[in-house]
Image 1 (cartoon, helix red, strand yellow):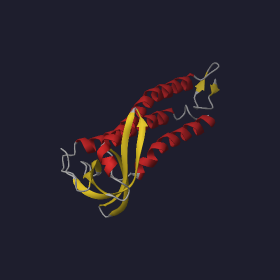
Image 2 (tube, helix red, strand yellow):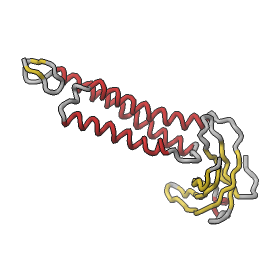
Image 3 (cartoon, rainbow, N blue to C red):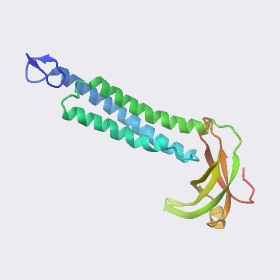
Image 4 (cartoon, rainbow, N blue to C red):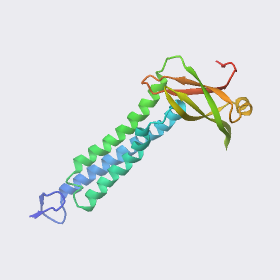
Amino acid sequence: MTICPECGKAFDGDQCWVCVTRRADIEETFSLSLPVALAGIIGTIIAFGTYPPLESNSLVDYSIPALFIIPGAIVLVLELSWRLARYALFVRLMFVLVAATFVMTASYYFLNGLLDGSTPVEAKAVVSEKYINHGRGSTYNLVWTLSWNQKNNIKGSMGVRRETFSAAEPGDSVRVMIHPGEFSQAWYSDVHLWGSRVRN
């Protein structure tokens, strides 16, 4: 009988079948969790495009790369130290939690906008720049800054109608339609020229 240096179990033969089984379980969990995590990331991007948050959330900004780097570093350390199979359950739970976190983030931002039935509030913003994206058809974008909820210099950008883009110049004032959000995460839905009527 030989004691496996990786999992600590005794085995006969050329390889430890406990480790083989545990590694297969890790690979299966990873193969299932990865597409779920990617779907969550894509969902978050779509939610940000549909209901763009007024202020960036530093927790989200840093958590997305951290959720790739930290688990990757843990798996690498365990693999290099011949302890991956010993902590197979922990590794599998980590993969599942990472995937679930991405899905919950996408759901939070999507439902925050979708369920928000509050009347939007107009906020005065100043155009800082304008640009055109050329792709499968041109999109016209305004970049603006405003003050909201006792915070100054909140920067945002949004695609606007061609007429709005042509009329607005850097330094001009525009109206940004701000929604409070179902979960108190403010987001904006449209930008109008100052003094123009809002189109329903």
